[in-house]
Length: 467
Image 1: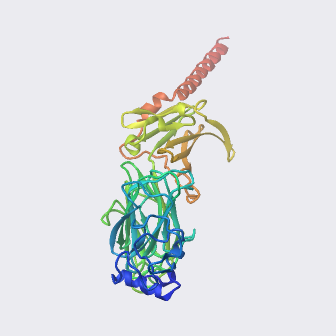
Image 2: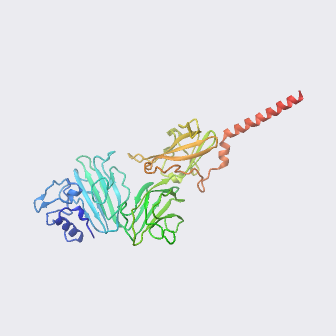
Image 3: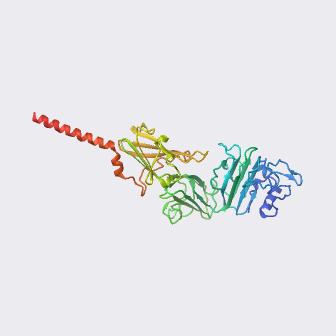
């Protein structure tokens, strides 16, 4: 086990930290510098200060303790797996407390962190009580994975190397029940269940380790598809003998196992188009050999709501499988304004509306007249707003519709996401063409007018002949 020595400026503190990991120092004991290793940390100090704080045995620390003596608060966690929680959990945590947990596992591994309970004082910018997760130990914003408060648990995290830091801070006012977390040593295996997310190869953007097999499994609710965006990729190049990705390579499989259909296999330095699964599961596997290493990759993904959007000369028709949005009420899905909410028809949410309603407007794009509106899908929970917006567009003359994600799952990172939702029929959920045809009253009127005009022309011709 290796404790990163860059965390400690004092060599004796380095020895104390290594002794702690070996178990040579008792929990709550004192090292050569009178340094409390498990009991309440000198909480007013930042992470780097925490790891450098000195004290004299029997005289207390040189910084004021913000948490009551005897309460476990922070520490170095070096076992392959473990649990930790806020002070007094499941009771209310103390006021004016700062705790830092430094999780250190074997080199070459990652730290997988998850939360089973989370309840902190809420603020829209988490300015009061908060929890921060850092990729590594340095307390700078470049390593910050996220700051959290309120009632929504943080997502699972995976560190880019074998060290992760967790910081909990409470102010002097409202106290809640706090949090409970678990960690384990990860051999590059992670499962994502959130609708959006991102991850990268171990140690990215630095060189990844050799002899790895890493797996990232994305498992979304039934009905969703997984769309993956390759933000950056640099792996060992192709074999000069075979031209194939025989060395380091990244593979994508449809479904949750390597037995699924292969969606792609990549290596070298390439600019890749997005990949979309055909089911609600997608597996990415990274293999590295024992020789050359490169920077690796950074990937972002989003759950695609499978929808069918079509149009006539006067109407929009939108269908979304209920199972894709089973957690939502129909009024959370609307076109333009909340008054144009979806209806539940069979196994689908349906919106059927004319162009002169529901906030639609006529625009001219590329010298073509189009009808445009915005489809809203509201995933918000409590105080956390999360509204996805899709631009719905129709070219009436051709009766062609398209959908583009314009806001929701971090659109700044998904700038490639043009036409993110394919306006194609999904398997088993196709729109009944006869239904649309019967509803396309504009075509019927147009054809009727043409027939009537033809009849009038024939009558006029016959009249002229008779005269």
